[in-house]
Structure formats: C-alpha cells, structure tokens
Image 1 (spheres, rainbow, N blue to C red):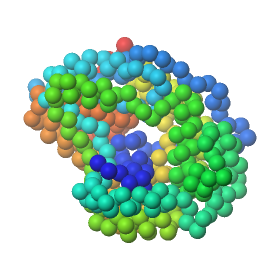
Image 2 (tube, rainbow, N blue to C red):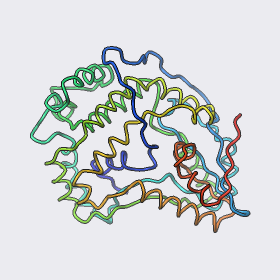
Image 3 (cartoon, rainbow, N blue to C red):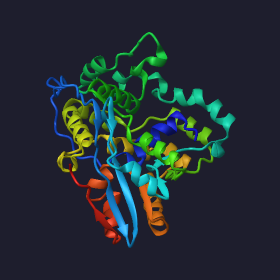
Image 4 (cartoon, helix red, strand yellow):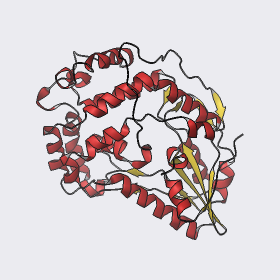
Length: 346
C-alpha cells in the first residue's frame, strides 16, 4: 500500500477505527493549563487487557483491544494470545483506509509527493496568526514552545506557523503525548503478526480503498482551498491543556488490563471535529471518500461475521473504544445475536 501524505492524514482522522465519537470539552483557562509535570513511566512487561470472546455455536472470534496512546517502553505480555493464534484459522487486522498503487500508479504517486507535502501549508502563504482567533493564538504559542522542539522559523518547510490549523494541531498533539511518556506506536500488532507468521496463520487486512479516479485534481483542489478546521484546532489545544492526565490514566489502565477503569474514564477527543473538517471538504467528494466511518464499520462487521461462519477460531484486533462503548462494533455484534463474553480482570 502506498499512502500519499494528504490521504494518510485523511485516513488518520476519518477512520472509524481510530476513536469513538468525541464528548464535549470543558471550558479552559489558557493561563492555567492542566499540569503535565508527571511523565508516565511504565517499564517492562505488562498484561494489557484480556480478549473479548464472541461466539455463535461452536465458532469463536477472540478480539484484542488496542489503546492509543500507550506508555513508552512497555512490553506486552498478551495473556495467552499466542496459544490462541496457534489454534486459529485467520487473523483480522485493525480496520484502516488507504490508497493502493493499483489505483493511482507508481510514477503518478512519486510525481505527486512534492505537491502533497506542500498541501499541508495554508493557501496564499497565510500564517496561523492570521487565521486563528486572537484569544486562541496565545494558547497555541504556549503549547508550541513547550512541546515542538524542532520548530524553526528559518526553514520554511519546517515552519509549523505556515501549516493549516488541522496539520499544526496534529503535529502538536503527537509531540505533547511523546513528552508525557506516551507513544502512538502500539505494541499489539507486532506480537500478533510474529505469532501468525510463525504458525502460518492467514492474516486478512480489513482495508477500505475508496476509488480515486482523479487524485491530481483532488490534490490541486485541496491545496487551493481552506478547510473549516478551526474547531479541530481549538479542541486539540483544549485537549492538550486539560486531558493529558486522563490520557496517562487510560494508558496506565490499558497497560495493566483494567477494563472497568477504561470504561469509566471519559474520553475528551478532538477527532470528531477534525473528522468533520475533512469530510465536509469538497476535495473528499472528488476523491470519492465519503461516509468513511460507516463504510469501515460495515466492512469490519461483514468480515467478522464471515470469519465466525467459516472458522472454528478467529483472532481480531480493534481499538478498545469499539469494545467498551455502547455504540461500538462489539455492541453491534451483540445486537445481531452473537454471545459476547467480557475478559476477566486480573
């Protein structure tokens, strides 16, 4: 799979597998951001959550719940997962969205790379200070100076002040979680892939590939247009100001396998606003990438039901939010009549 930077960004925010819907964020005071003096340190082997069991008749689907961000430098013990994989007939990967070389061509992709990188910048060379509301911009500066070490006004390509608000927000968010002892690199899939390869178990990618009939036109349209992304920017700033402690708590709960704590902890997530900024953009229609969350949900549910129909044992990977929320994928399977068993807490 080849992913253009612009499309990779779209995948990050639109994919239903990335997160549950956002809850409203509380009001914030820019002069008193939430304390982030604590850096989460969880070193060594950790159990992570157990597996959810979905059954119909004698066939079983075991689901592993993933969490992002997670503690840095932790090793995942996987609670008997390797033995389950050894007995399985198929592994279902985490749902994702992508663009393949078959759709746009290898040389077309290469020639589009410079334009795709340029597309992250604001049209007409606008700066963030020209776009972001005056009351919000000082809060951005405070967090930028605290978390974005590589910020460089001497290098235009590295000047985050020239980026679109949504790209700047994503970059700031990734740097903030890293400095808080967290990472968006999940330890789950490498363990699963290694075990599946060892036992020669089939891995099925749950990958949605929207038709891309005219990528050049879509990229040109995106580069020339503004996005309605200030709400995404504002909510990302607010989340960093107020939610770092909760992010650490969720990461810690996932690391030690505390599913009830994960269920109780509220999620103040900016991604719904960022999804909306992308899905409402005209270039998305040009790409044909509409209704991505519902398409991904349909694709995963269909794949899971097919696996349950033909395999005695299947292993799947899903974000934890899809397993513990009332409207997640697991809840949809339960409504369809499948028997669901929660993992035991150690």
